[in-house]
Amino acid sequence: MIVTQEARTQAQELLDFIDASPSPWHVAATVAQRLESQGFEALREEEGWQLESGGRYFVVRGGSSVIAFVMGTQTPDWTGFRVIGAHTDSPGLRLKPRAPFAAEPMACLGVEVYGGPILATFTDRDLSLAGRIVVRRKKGVQTRLVRFSHPLVRLPNLAIHMNRNVNEDGLKLNKQTELPLLLGNLLEAFSPAEQFRSLLAHLAGVEEDAIINGEFHVYDTQQGVFWGVHEEFIANSQLDNLSSCHASLSALLSTNEPEATCICALFDHEEIGSESAQGAGGTFLSDVLQRIASGLDRDTLGQAMARSFFISADMAHAYHPNFPSAYEPAHKIRVNGGPVIKTNACQRYATNAESEAYFIALCECAGVPWQQYAHRTDLGCGSTIGPIVASRLGMRCVDVGNPMWAMHSARESAGTVDHSLMIRVMQRFFS
Ligand code: CO
Image (cartoon, rainbow, N blue to C red; front, side):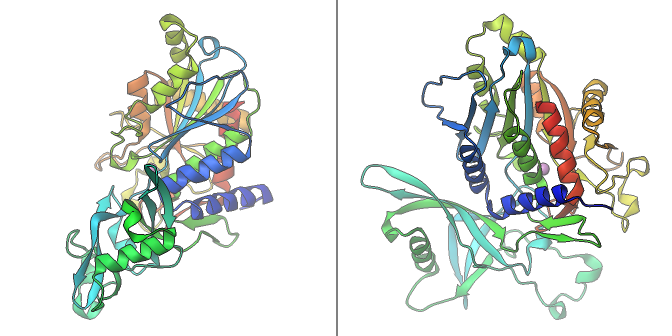
């Protein structure tokens, strides 16, 4: 396996991108920062838009979803839109609104489960909190991103001496009683709520009573690494799906004066079903497309949509040699074997023969290998934003993604080379 310097650099950029983005709100901020530094203009949905041919823009909704686009030099009724979608959220734990509580002799934080994480992987890790708080200002309120950078909280395992069958039965955790995070020793002078509020105020540099509320994602402070004989693999949290966010963003940033309008749509809330104002099931993408095409009448907008193409990019399951019976034998996916096209007869993925052929053609033009995934027939198949966007917008769509191991673990793995291959295909799509 040869890992080129370019592939290595792009994978390192991905690891840095993830380490800078410990919550979906931070993802949106990191993306916005990268876009602005490369000359993209921030638009606000509350204001009027004056869009120019070849112009570069982005808009954030709900603080956690971003749509960025480069205006085409031709009109969309002629070229259609080229859209890549991915998601900014990852499954894990979130703090409850009144999280701090006393469990003699400890101060703890109550959590909710967000999406479908492998809960056992959150034990014994150097966890911390990242999210946003709303604070009172002289005039109105302000939302601020916050992040504790050191390991603030922990979920220690029960020792094997009290859980003798853990290796035979697996680690099972009751979501209400066995997931609260340990925060500190209980103090006589301060309640856990007072301790936590003072920590937050100190972190944010505001008075304690200025903090109205907040929302927090539990994240792993361990940074991303390369591993394997040739460092041909990477490991980090949130590879699902910040890999696809980073790949599509990298492709868009390198796009210059395309004929068709090229769009990156990065949505929150995929892991919980996408039904929200800023999720893929909401109106965000269709609202933005309509504003981009505001000069078109209903008839020409219909033509534009019919000529458009949507690449739904989310991660795919790589073959794990220790668990051969978990996979469909004809669809073994190899890490560093290239982008994976995902198909499901029941439309859990939006791919069909024609959209797949289109993606294969893109891979061939880009000189990139590709693979095909289908789930075992006797196992329930996952889904993603592809079918949701395809059904809302009536757009042609293919579901693709890079191979990975341990999807929804606190620490996931993927291929160093695959990331640069995916960027190359996406650049081809946008060119
Ligand atoms: Co995903």
